[in-house]
Amino acid sequence: MATRTTTGVTHYHVQKKRRADFLEEWRQYRNTVVRRGDVVMHDTTRGMRRGVYVGADGDRPTRSMDALVHEIDPGVTSTVHRHSWDAMLFVVAGWGWTEIDGERVEWGPGDSLHLPAWAWHGHGNEGSETARFLSFSSEPMLETMGMAFQEDAGRTPVEQLAPRPPYTASIEGDDPYARRVRRLAKDQDARRSGRLHTSWDDLELLQTPRGTRTTFLLDRAIGYQASGITMAMFEIGPGRGQSMHRHPGEAWLYVVEGRGHTFLGTEPDKGEEHPWEKGDIIVVDHFLWHQHFNDDPEKTAKVVRIHMFDSLLETMRVLTDPVVLFEEPPEAIRDQQAGDYSAIEWPALERPTWP
Image (cartoon, rainbow, N blue to C red; front, side, top):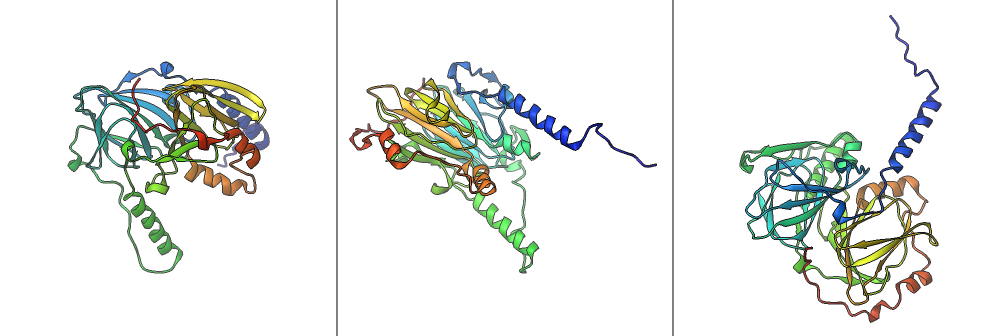
């Protein structure tokens, strides 16, 4: 017996309504600045507390990245788990350790870590104060593609846990199948040998034409192999501002130290200013012109910037060419906005404090 499938209306009308409904719902989730005080901490079965700055588990859904905060008390060791997405950590308080596939990494305030996809990991705090760190992950992007998986191992010893998914290293031949096997094996070899830790003590900030001094925290430029997430930190001089720019994709800016405000607008001269302070996250939405200012006349402000440049934005760059995906004002205007940054007396770099 033949079965006829019908929606009752045309394909055109179904898709048009679906797209409109999606955008209308999505606009309701948009935030500009998520205040530190608005993030509620919850006890979890891992033995740690967790709060959501941005992400579906805190009723603030996103499409490419999430931003969470975690606390672990003195004397606590968390359970062990793994997931199919990459995560990057930035420590804001306390001293502790993270074990990644059996490799123990000691960390303190200002340190950064990479948790590779499918790597078993757990955390511990043997100090005298509560440790606190943020995590930024690609879970929303993988969930969109139906590839987000998580596995909890409780307190099973790491030597009893299954390794990361296996892969074929190489096969002979120059046919398309053999080439794919070798290409993917080469990619996995690189991802499984990438860097895991950046110590605050090893950071060197360099001045840029945009009026700030910056450094990479987690990026392929310094040996990390992630699924596109990149993390950098920039410092704004007292009473100064970073030059204006815009780009697509979700970008989070976590305020490590200082207070200030950010201009966000659909045009360089049409927008609003949003104040921020230490512990807040600034949410920069798609293609908004933005400029960050340090409102303290005496102290610098430090901000950690996270986005999905090396995967999502690079793909968009190819698909939308020749549309520009990173845009600044002409150099003369950029330099005017940045001012004479050579006159800034940058302080010695000291580990962050909390709160």
